[in-house]
Length: 273
Image 1: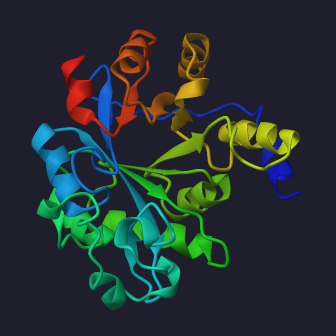
Image 2 (image 1 turned 90 degrees about the vertical axis):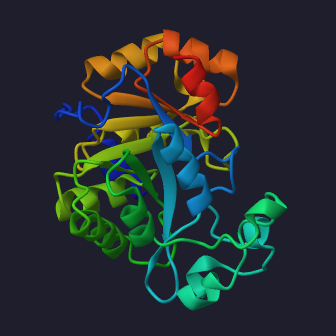
């Protein structure tokens, strides 16, 4: 099984790097997909909301058929654009023709799928960006990691970006491409996955592999017990928790000492700090 070689490295010591520049506040609020309760997710409208609030931005990156890095959580376009098609099978010009805002509300009609370059140009280092890179079947994920790293460097944002992924292999490729970019390992309970039990255990342990050597753990809220958070922080990790929208849950996680909250409601989270 391909998971096993990295899982065998799970017990290796973590080499923490300074990340204070990415987490200047006791608790960092991160707008999930920009702030998915405030505007259509992963659009410039959502990112404008995050900028207005002064919160960090989480977004999702995929490669489209013409090679550009575009912003979308889903690989399929039905939910956000009403189109039966896949991003990796459509060119940027074809994607530009789609409306990904009208489903959220008429005032957002005409929102388009942005590219990573466009988001970086607009944000321009004003807030930290959590770039979740979507590992895609049938694509060269090593090349995807290299292109993300190159785009970050071209915009001079090495110190303003965290790259996160569920794939430790992709993060290892990112580390090889540019070790100065902060890396975040996404992990969770995988409760709704059809993976076998031992595969879920291995995936959780992969968070600690030394090849990717993550600086940040982005964990599902169900994992974020006070004991777990403290243990990971003692190992040198920063701990982000996703996706937390209930105010009571936010308050409890703040009490437990998490480093950041990834939320669809960043405005609500700010009120609790």
